[in-house]
Length: 260
Ligand code: PGA
Image 1 (tube, rainbow, N blue to C red):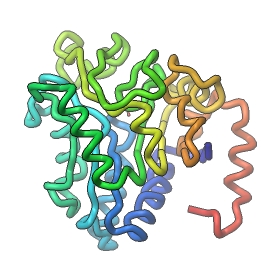
Image 2 (spheres, helix red, strand yellow; image 1 turned 90 degrees about the vertical axis):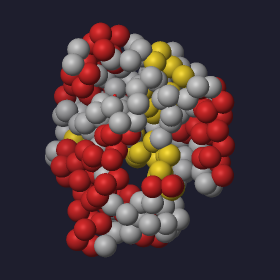
Image 3 (cartoon, rainbow, N blue to C red; image 1 turned 135 degrees about the vertical axis):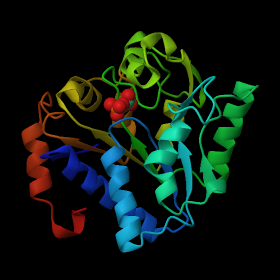
Image 4 (cartoon, rainbow, N blue to C red; image 1 turned 90 degrees about the horizontal axis):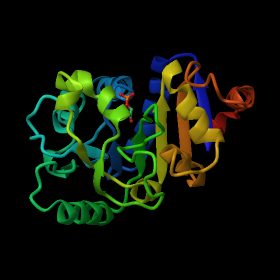
């Protein structure tokens, strides 16, 4: 696991954007895994800017989103479909027919989850999976106690996660109870996992995921088993890391060929 600590979320997001952009340039048919939430917003702004100003070309790419609420139509303002179109898809040239987001309205959810897994495989697997982390350690919507080898499936949200989403739905009672999420096993098959976390409120989850034991109680900790997991975090999110000084030293002393 590589842990990169940046002074603030903006600089961390710009660094993450450079990592994504490098893959997009080197592999025009790359497959990107997208996340939603507040955390990736500055990363998406950077990618949109690179598309507009530097001609970063998404036209050959395929994308898969991590998750979606069950029972929420794509056009609902708080669906992850709406989020993705508002924050990135409307502003880059990724072809609509190669955008994949779990279908929260599927009549047969297990079958649609199997199809989603199959679609990821048919696309050649995910090159970079962008991830946030919940205050409870979840990645995607794999809540604590999720199997470390889980696949795309329906999950029940914890109360903590529903509370976090309350504002988007105008109150906790209106937050859906169920979601479809890529599993931890699905995420682990991505060639690179790029996890972003900003702010003091994420510090405990970041420290548990990066330095704690690998446990289903902290789903993000499974990334310790990933051969290419990069955590890009700000100083506040790094506040509880016991080896923060070491991670900073490593970043500051990278040879040029190793820099992002
Ligand atoms: P956030 O959510 O980016 O809105 O903090 C992250 C998550 O819950 O995965």
